[in-house]
Length: 316
Image (cartoon, rainbow, N blue to C red; front, top):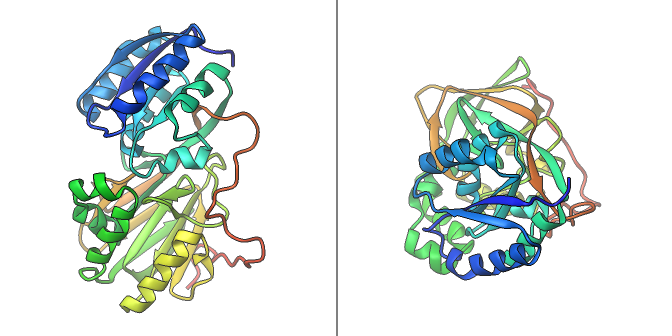
């Protein structure tokens, strides 16, 4: 598409990087004669409401914030049919890394001025949208153990600290995973359903997922000991976990997850729904400003020499 003439810019006032980067982004947009209207919604609900009410009057919507902020905006932006630009002001910025959006605010704003877009899928967990991944088990405990003060200081490394605390409390649970009609029973410490590629501060859903392939990638961790869990955690960060004997992987369009007792589920890092949960994909639902050309390889990409083994859905 051509460069937008008028954009609605929504900045998360609670983001630590917003104050530093916002002026750089505004300068870049104005240098390209793009008119900017700013709003500062203070909650996910307010962000959604502003986009739905005011967004149709603009050529594009720009969201400044982390993965949670982009998640909160995604459904509304898709509903009004406008492209979204992302200024990655969060801690992990997994969504931005997936699409090759630069972390520098000025460079990210330049993408909007260039006008190159890409359509991506949206995942749904019950009635909640997610861009990167939805999880239950260990990742939810990690979210609950995150220290906001430590997160501001340690950035992405804060996820490692929170994980070290969470693994001591994590116990296996019985889970039924149904993928495109094929049901499997497991005992797991974690189940993750990925729409994108990265989640949790650089962890990878797998070696093959893409954010525009119309599929969900699922993995379940069956580790029983802390040593096994630690090994898998390192492998997940490198995208090498699909070959681990204590992990099962699945791929499909429709996924249902059931547990014996109701369990919380996090979507893009925020606890938002519970089991039982139905997952689906909305194909090509969101248009995003991205760099021209193919996305640069992720620095945690799975090495070419690593063999892949994917567990078929429903296998015992």
